[in-house]
Amino acid sequence: METARSYEAEYAWLTIQVDRTTYSAYFGTGAQLLLPGPTGRKLNGKGVMMTEAYTRGYTVLAKDEPHGYKYDLISNCSG
Image (tube, rainbow, N blue to C red; front, top):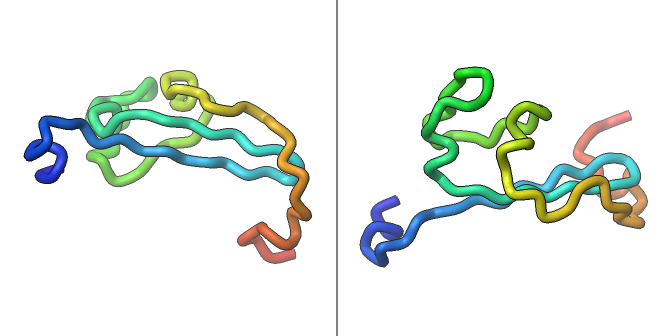
């Protein structure tokens, strides 16, 4: 945040959700993470909630787009 202030900028984030056959990408500002979200929960800039209630307030860059990857090769889930 200090670097952003020195450039009179605002920090932002990008998160990408990968499912078995699709991906979604969301963008937002650090300020969004400091304000209470739709459920009243504050994250204090330490994470991005990915529930539907929260993602409605983010800028959607991609929503349920096919990715064409072999999910088992890119997944961090076992089984």
